[in-house]
Length: 288
Image 1 (tube, helix red, strand yellow):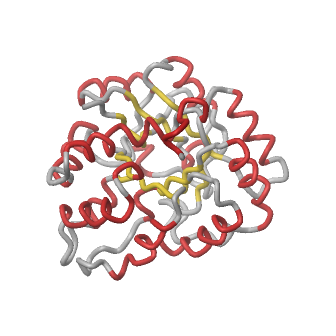
Image 2 (cartoon, one colour):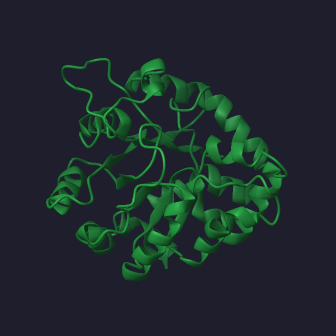
């Protein structure tokens, strides 16, 4: 089974070439305690038997300066894809998208919550961001969203306006699953399955949420696949933001998914990511 990690980060030790300028005004604790550079990420992936990875901009370290992600992709194009961060409200947002796409990166990320920015930012869906969304739809550029479940109503309105955009929700939008089946606390997450462009990133955060209260990870996985289909769910380790190694984080996810058909597991652990970030010319019929 080809394994592709959909969510990793890299942190450079060279602060002169890559100065810290975090979104939220302060650097995340994890990036100071567990910094992993490009070579360190490669070693960790090799140890886990992971073929490829998506390197996602460490927004709580470098803000919208995506040069270290570019460096990773250029150094190892056979192993890495890159996702960059932008300010979607900026007047030059479309220009910045063009710039980072031309640098070889594969889609952008909007950071609306996180350890340095708790809560759900209220700018998601602001009309100033419409040009960025329109350009993503026109050019078939994937959008990765770091958000909470409280932001899903705003996302629904965006997808009504820009129905062709393909989005990937980090950590499954951080749902509350503690009530267990039928997961009424996460109704908004399951209802988003009606929007065909919505994909879910399955990380340790979602899996740990599925272990709380009355929830059982295997049941959550089965219900998630029933709602979205495995071809809209992609596993990511969140290494090194997550404690542990890619090998351990992969084992955690594989255990939760072990009751699924092998074909579904193959999609979740690699196939979905490969299709989601494939150029439009290669994706062809797989996107309808």
